[in-house]
Amino acid sequence: MARVVIVGGGITGLAAAHRIHRDHPDVEVVVLEAGERPGGLVSTTPFDGLAVDAAADAFLARVPEAVALCTELGIADQLVHPAVGSALVLSGGVLRRLPGGLVLGVPTDLEALEASGIVSPAGVARARMDLEGRGAPFGGDVSVGELVRTRLGDEVMDALVAPLLGGVNAGDADALSVAAGAPQLAAVADAPSLIAALRAEASAAAGSAPTPVFAGFPTGTATLVDALVGALDPASVRTGSPVTGITATVGGGFSIEVAAADTLTAEAVIVAAPAHATASLVAGLDTGLGGVADGLATLEWASVAMVTLAVNTDDLDHPLDASGYLVPVAERATVTAVSFASTKWAHLHRPGRAVLRVSAGHAGDASPLDLDDESLVAAVCTDLASQLGLRGRPAGWRVNRWRDALPQYRPGHLERAAAWQRDTWAAHPGVWLTGASFAGLGLPACVRQGNEAARRVGDHLSR
Ligand SMILES: Cc1cc2nc3c(=O)[nH]c(=O)nc-3n(C[C@H](O)[C@H](O)[C@H](O)COP(=O)(O)OP(=O)(O)OC[C@H]3O[C@@H](n4cnc5c(N)ncnc54)[C@H](O)[C@@H]3O)c2cc1C
Image 1 (cartoon, rainbow, N blue to C red):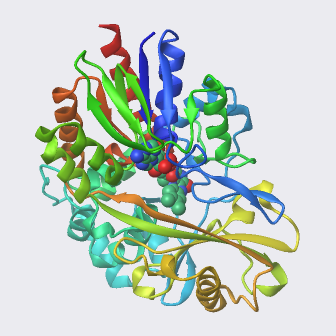
Image 2: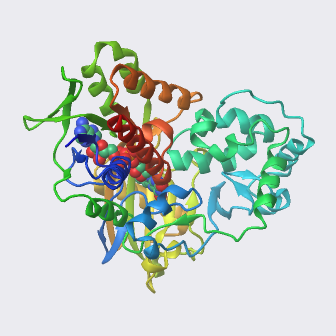
Image 3: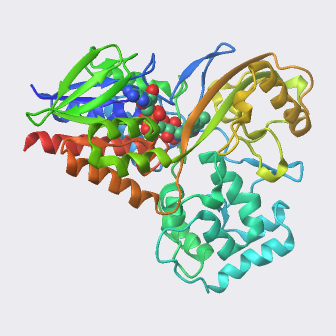
């Protein structure tokens, strides 16, 4: 029986394992996960008597792969959608409602933009210039900053696009690759007018039935992890098993070393660990792959703290009548985003009590993660006192630190990442590198990459 070893039991690795197990029942799949639980960045634990996600709490439902996987696993009927659609942004110390018609922060309804008060009349006039349709094609991947500042001006970038896209990636949207970090904008980047192209896309979709943008589970996102693990053979997922080396064996297979002095052999290996961990495995695999290892090691990362608070609503001045708010860098706060989780999700709603999920830390500034829990909660509460009128201490809190968790894609990232994958496979057919470090973060993109890894390795074994 051929064996495939998967390094890393996050969503990418587990999706790949599931796909191989389903499509190639004659192949043994072993997932080696360094941590004590599967799921990687996806984790749901009890908080204030509820199942509350410690990181990802939703995924894009309009990108099909994650929903399709839920359907296959028989858990799609449990999916729920956010109870509110609108969100806020902190603007000059005041929380304002984001205007309708935003696509990743790019406004398509300029009247709504003007009415929001988030951008000045001069800023709206500058954005309107995009409709003159004088934008020249970029002819390749550029940064979100270059695209948006050129077409719609600085105010739209700083007040809307940067907090929105910078929030998703916990990074600097000015330096973010459009192709890797904002695919919806990449599709229209070369159009003479960004706004007109986005409006045309929206009206083309207007005939079809509206579909919810996001989906989640009342039992938390770990429901997907549990279903994936449950669909595999019981011994397939080995936690507490950090892989320390991969070597090619004489017969054409691979030998995989696990820290606890265990060694496995396999006909193929899928490495679905973050690039900073993958780099040393690639470096050890083959001296000829030094360029790949160096490239993987130089990818930048953002670290994020997720502070979950239980708050009595009597202790707040704000009605929490939105899914939450974003905080632009210019506001100079510790918090970068606040999700009103108990408004966003009906299953977390209880009269008199709110659950807030507060993010802090971004690329280039991991200092909030270095604070001890008490100090971090205190810093977050100081911000919430001015932003939401929070009085006193929260009734409960939890801190999760996610270090080096979100890759920072620079322009040209997708081509570079594809070359790392290709070069490794060419040197060692049967070794495929994958995961959020490569072709997009977020659960649907990771499931897609897991599927692709499984297909490649499955084809390789069938030859
Ligand atoms: C705070 C936060 C909030 C987020 N919110 C959302 C959201 O709402 N929606 C969304 O779609 N996405 C969200 N994301 C992004 C999403 O969670 C990730 O893009 C995705 O989970 C990455 O999956 P992965 O399998 O590629 O990597 P990971 O989840 O990082 O999994 C990689 C695994 O490899 C393991 N590993 C590392 N080295 C080794 C080794 N040597 N041997 C064995 N195992 C190893 C790690 O322990 C880890 O479990 C969020 C991320 C963060 C940090």
